[in-house]
Image (cartoon, rainbow, N blue to C red; front, side, top):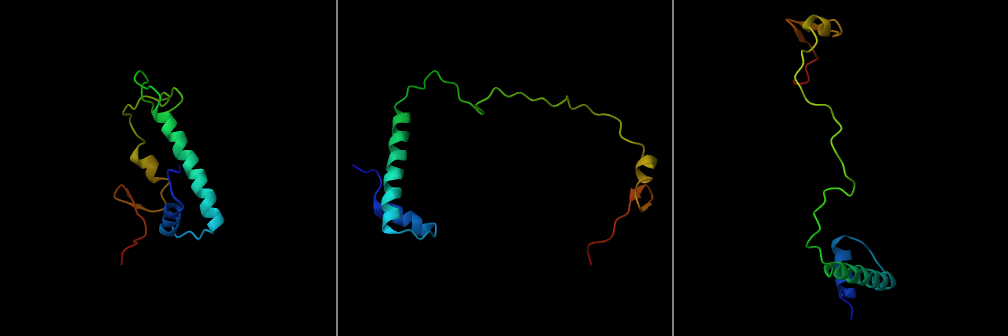
Length: 96
């Protein structure tokens, strides 16, 4: 017995604005039924002692510790700026 009907497949295709033929609707009905059957098999597994995963690999943060450090001197930063005034970088105005 199919868990999804051809009419449901056509309805979803219509909602997604997909034009499908009768043959495609039949093929998709069979494929989606197989996917649903497989998902139902997964529901039968005992997962009581299985810890939830956020990633399949054991990942760890490899970034350095975030510690505050003294930045560059203002004079050194401003010497690279094409235009500056009163210790700040000047940029062209974008608002009219």
